Structure formats: C-alpha cells, structure tokens
Length: 311
Image 1 (cartoon, helix red, strand yellow):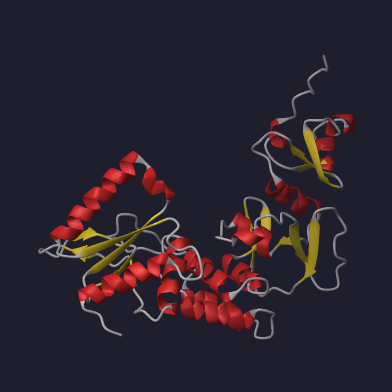
Image 2 (tube, one colour; image 1 turned 180 degrees about the horizontal axis):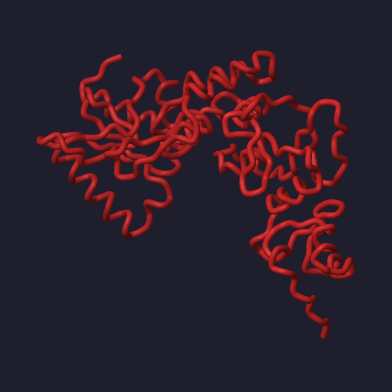
C-alpha cells in the first residue's frame, strides 16, 4: 500500500504556492512532486483536493512575478462579476505587465502589456489586480454590449436604507464613466460607453438585467427597479424586482432558489401583500428569458395592455 505524502505546512495546504515558498518552509522538492499536488505551471503547485481549482493559482503567480497584475477575465472572477457562459471554460491566468517588460512564458498564462492610471491597480488579499472599474473597461474588449450591461449593473448595485437588504455600490456610475474617459483610444471603449448608458441601479441579478434589456428591446416601457410598493400609510410592503407604478404592475423573476419550501412561502406572502395594495403581480420563472423571442416579454406586454398601457 503506497504511503501517504507528508502533510504540508498550513500556509501551503489550502491554496497555490511556489516551490520557493516550499523551500523556505523546509519542504523537499520530492514532496512538491507528490501525487496530491497539481503542477499548474513551472514552479507553481496547487493541492489536488476538491476545493482547489485554477483560480487558486492566482496568488502564486503574483508572488513569483512582482510586476504582474491580474486583468480582464481573471480579475473579473476574483471580483465575482457575472461573466457570460461562453467564457467560463477559459481558465487561463490573464496577467498584464508594464509596457517594455517581456510577457510571461508559462503554461496556462496569457500575458498582455497594459498601461494603468492611478488607482486602477489594487491589492486584495495579497492579489494584485485591476480595480472593478478598470476590469469592466478591459472586459469591453472581449464582450458584447448586452454582456457588459449585467456586469455594470452588478458594480453599481445598491439599495437604500429602508430596503430589506440595504447595500452600497462597489463603484458608482460616475466613477465607471470617469475610468472609461481616461482611455479614449482603448479597444472596446465604445462598447463600454454604450453599456454604461444602459446600466441601471437596482438590478439584483444578471437575469433581471437581461430581462430589462429584453423588455426595452421589444419596445415596451422601461420598468423601475426595486421601487417599493407602499401601503395606505406609506410604508413599503413589497420590493418588486421590476415594476410599473403608473399601471400598478409588479414583475417578479423567480429563479431556481424560489423552488425551496421556505422561499415559496415568502413568495405567497409577497403576492398577498401585492394584491392588498391593489397591484397586479406578474411572476416569471427560470426559462422565460430563453430564446430570441422570450416568453417573458409576451407575458409582460399582455399584462401592460390589460392594465391600460397603449404603445
């Protein structure tokens, strides 16, 4: 029966590390070649337990190369930006160096030369990466406008103090526009500007952003986001995902999480409060946004018409 490898020191056990770090902690080179470690690139190892993955290698790359900055898709994953599905299979580490510095030649690494303005590179838990605003601008080189809007919505996502889940935005819309203005000749800057013109505060999910875009693209009025329905005393009782206050129409997008029993009970109570306030609730489910002509648009158009809207 093969012997189990010697346990790694705790600083190396949960994330990526370089063999030089292992040397400094007294770990032999033979141990760094053991089967419980994955060699993701020259001189970099990741423990092979399920919690590890390609993104775990990011910190080690930055430690090996003091001039490297994580950019575009790699930075977006650290910031948990809602990237489109078509990009999720590309786990290459995307790194930028100052102009004039040789690009890295490593497996699974894609190097770029970029120039950054002040404040566009930050350090987060030991990782050097582009700020959320600069990451958005860099993504505009690779993504389409409709793919950029949910990302912009996520960055400016905020709720007021009287909301059940108040929150401050990561970046304000004026701050995003300022970063875009700083790089007028950059690839993708036109798409970034168009996406910011379509961005709105209040979208709780990428699906809500896509729903709003589909509604407007179909020629329907643009809905409000997370505007409260109030009772007779002025107290907010429901916060619809999207709504039309003129026609007293509430639109709720119920994703997969709404299948849970406790969430279902809350949805029933929300519906009762909506009816009590003399509003109409339109409930949409996962799948209603699929296809070139989403069912969601048809349902909302019919509800608007029934409420008195005319084109």
